[in-house]
Amino acid sequence: MKPREIIILLLAAAFGAIAIVTWSGEEEAKAQAAKFKQQAEEVTAKAKADQEKAAKDFAALKTAADAASKQAAADLAKAKDDAVKATAQLKSDLAAAKEEAAKASKKAAELEKAKAAADARVNELNAELANLRNGSELKEAIAQRKKAEADLEAASAALREANAKLAAALARIAELEEENRRLREQPRGTPNTSPNYRVL
Image 1: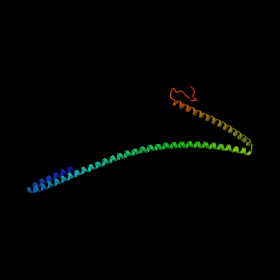
Image 2 (image 1 turned 135 degrees about the horizontal axis):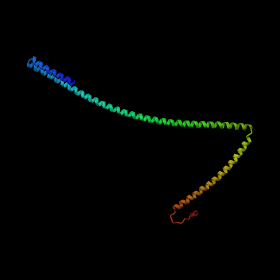
Image 3 (image 1 turned 90 degrees about the vertical axis):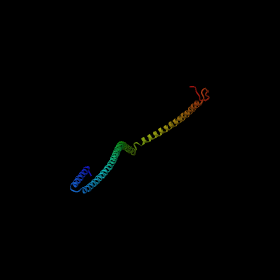
Image 4 (image 1 turned 30 degrees about the vertical axis):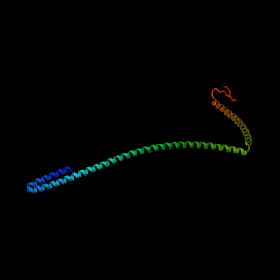
C-alpha cells in the first residue's frame, strides 16, 4: 500500500472519530476511536510489511539483474574472443588454402611441361624406330654402341685410377692426422723422433 493511501485512511479514521464523538456518547466514541485506531494500526502494519516485502523483492530483483548483467558481459566477452579466434583461424586456413592452391598450380604447370617433353620424346623415339625398321640407322647405332662401350671402359679405367689416388690421399691424410696427434701430445722442448717429422 502506498504512503498516500495510508495517510488518506488515517485522515478518514480521524474524521470518523470526530464524527462519532459529535453524534454519540463518550463511551461509544472511545470504543469507535479505539476501533479506528486499531484498524489504522493494522493498516499501518500491513503497509509496513508490504513495503518491507517490496524492498526485499526489489533487492532480490536487483541482485538477479546484476548477476544477469555480469553473465551477459561474460558471455559477450567470450563471444568476442571466440569470434576473434574464429577469424584468425579462418585467415590461417585461407592462407594455407592459397598456398596449397599455388603449389597445386605450380605442380600442374610442371606436369604439363613434363607431358610436353614426354610427347616430344615419344615422337623422337617413333622416328628412331621408323629409321631402325628401315635399316638405314642400324650400322650407325652399332657404331655408336661400340663407341659408348669404349668410352665406358675408358671411364671405368679412369675411375679405378681415381679411386687408387683417393685411397693414397686418404692414407696420407691418416698419416698426417696421426703425426699431428703425436705433435700435440708431445711435451714442448722434446725432440721429435718420428721418421715422418719434417721441420717446417
